Amino acid sequence: MTSVSDPISEIEESAMRELGRVSDSSQLEAWRHGYLGRKGKLTRVLRGLADLPLEERRSLGAEANRIKLRLQAAYQEQRARLEQDRVAKVTEGERLDVTLPGPPLPRGSLHPITQTLRDVLEAFENMGFQVVEGPEIEWDYYNFEALRIPADHPARDMWDTLWIDHEGDGRRSMLLRTHTSPNQIRIMEHTQPPIRVVVPGKCYRFEATDPTHEWMMTQVEGLAIDDGISMADLKGTLTEFARRIFGEERSVAFRCDYFPFVEPGMELRIDCFICRGEGCRTCGRTGWIEILGAGMVHPEIIANAGYDPDRYTGFAFGLGIERIALLRHGVDDIRHFYANDLRFLQQF
Ligand code: PHE
Image (cartoon, rainbow, N blue to C red):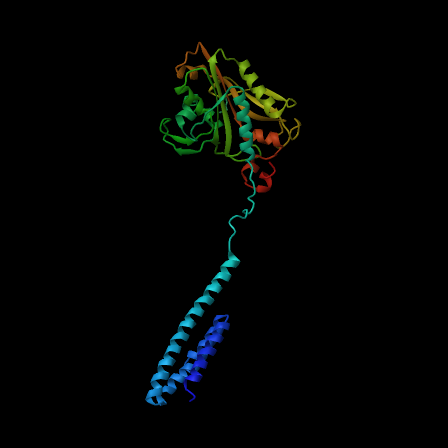
């Protein structure tokens, strides 16, 4: 007797065979539609059951249901496998090889002012000076008063000041230090001679900028105090410094100058590197560029520090790092240093 179960087992076989060949989700959905969908082959068989006699309906029904469950399970399995393959393919293409070297990082270099500052400090360290630092926000007292520049003294005009809090009282007014000289006082307050220090730091002035002036600049203060220090020590130290930084061939000149905290006071100039002394825009037509102020520490300041002014003398100087960098590199405008143009900075 030909059994009605023959076509149904054929349906099972062909369904499983076709499912094995399905290779993507749209084929899989077509397969499901073809067998298990509303008009699918198996669904049709199940629908036809109602017309069969009870006996056949039972056995065929049981068989058809078994097949239905099997195909549904096979469908789920195949779907999961396809999804796994898809994910594996995507991640395969994106996999990171963590052992690969990273993209090269461009190497920066030190800012020309930092380079010059380091060279200057090294020159002084080699001459026996110690490097110390002080605050950028300073009291009027240290920046002016203790340096013999009282309020209303005309010498205050030498330093156009950026005030933070101006109370008209030296011990309560704060400012951005206009020079590193307040460190002379700070150091003397808590040190006994012999003293030989250099103090690097940023200073601020409220002034119009031009090729040799900026509102922010870097200074290095020098202070030496001991038994019997003389002007000859000062000139010798600064000449040696200039020789180390600029080379032997450069001309240096000492000239009288006035600063309330030194007596006598002087300035050190170097011949202009642009015009070689002829006079140009950079040197303000003088042929010289002033790089530092200096002098013998005023005896009153020595006495105020509690040192014996008959025994101790000393010298101080304050030099501008930007000016020195201009001279060394032949740059004609100080403002280039802080304009942050990489085309300029990358040359150093
Ligand atoms: N502080 C002075 C200035 O900024 C420079 C100076 C320092 C002069 C030490 C004499 C002694 O102009």
